[in-house]
Image (cartoon, rainbow over all chains, first blue to last red):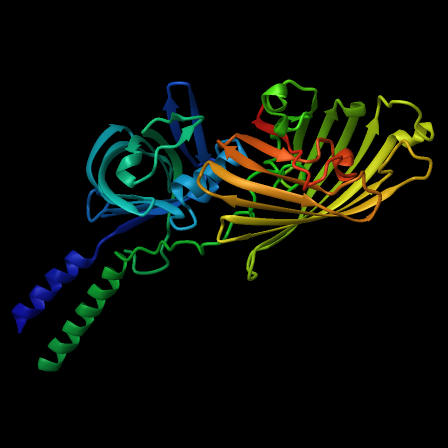
Amino acid sequence: MKTVVIVYMLLAVTFITQGTELHVKQGAKNQVVFVSDAPFGKFEGTTNNIDGYLYWENNILTANSSLYFEVDLNTLDTGIGLRNRHMRENYLQTDKYRFASFKGKITNVTAVSQGSFKVDVDGAMTIHGVTQSIKITGTLAKTDESSYNLKSDFTVKLSSYNIEIPSIMMVKLSEVIELHLNFNLQEVIKPEGKK
Amino acid sequence: MKTRSIIFLAVIILISLISNASAQITWKQHEVVDNLPLQLFHSPQSINLPTVETLQQGDFEFEISHRFLPPIKNGTKDFYGFDGPVNMRIALGYAVTNDLVVTLGRSNVEDNLELKGKYRALQLKETFLPLLVGVQIGIARNTQTFGQTANAGRTYQYFGQLIFNTMIYKTFGIGIVPSYLYNSNIYVNEVQNSFTLGMNFQYYVSKMVSVLAEFNPTVNGYVNRFDSAAFGVELETGGHFFKIILTNNAKLNSTQFLSGADKTIGGGEWRLGFNITRLLKF
């Protein structure tokens, strides 16, 4: 009986974890930008409509970490209304695939400076209904007691997500799209269950 | 002893369950709301009739349109009309808001200068067929008239249009455009008015290509000989619309087009024309 109690106590101790959960702090300062760099010119689309969370335990970023972010593709603005509609209806098909999302976990952390970390993330990107595993690197910086800023730059290949390469006046746009993310996260204070 | 152990165990399990609950992610996806305006036709205009489509606030749209006067049946003699003469229109539209476009246009026919405003008034998304309703009003002045107009004030013309658009299977657009024109003919003594019932149809074949037709019968009032009909092909590129059409009405500015055609629909005297519009952003 005693042994059972001890085992349970040990188990309980391991279960008493301190979880840190951050949610995307909504606001105009969040920026998701895609850049298509084609031979005849460059164009970009922007939205600040990103949402999601980042979670870790016991103040260790890699401990049981998980993260999920999604971007509402209906809100992407290239600056020209007609082009936005073309992008939504002909290429991204946002009526069927409204969100681009990324789900993953932090696999490695390197401190860059006080309160700033380079984080390696391993996960699955879903765009246009197609999911691909992808490794991304970002910078997570603590901006105050409970706020963080996350920056990440990476590229995606349109053909990997079954997105037809858009052409304007018969000239194809770039197949590789650069993505630049820069957004803010706010720690969630949980009313209970947190030690 | 045994009871105490069980209670102790239960407490520990409870604690472990509570603390484990902290590993539950509390984030939830926001309720997904429809955040897009209804858009049916791709181009803000059919061939001559307007659609409810507007531009994004701050966008400009430049238009240049031609109607070649010699009918295509003259063949190589007039090079299918390209030898001219030609009616032309240039126009610049500006989106004051996402729902309001103001356009200034000029045609070489009587040097007609027109100013019109189009407002996207209503959208119904959740109905059996999607419906967009718009209204367009305009004023035009014929700045170069030939011979005498009835009086100086008669060089001005006014028009108003209601625009109803719907679309079936996202590929077949239908427009109904009842239009009223005041002072349809600037040269006659009595002020003439026209009421027409415009209709336009457009089938979107692919991302880039669609075929379109329009018909503008005069229901009541003055008509310059015949009802208007036109059909053609539209190419779109995400910034340009390029329309190549055949029509029996070679007039381009709204008040001139609405007053009717000079050739019959059945007479085989179709004229070639094109509209090119280009979105501009400064």
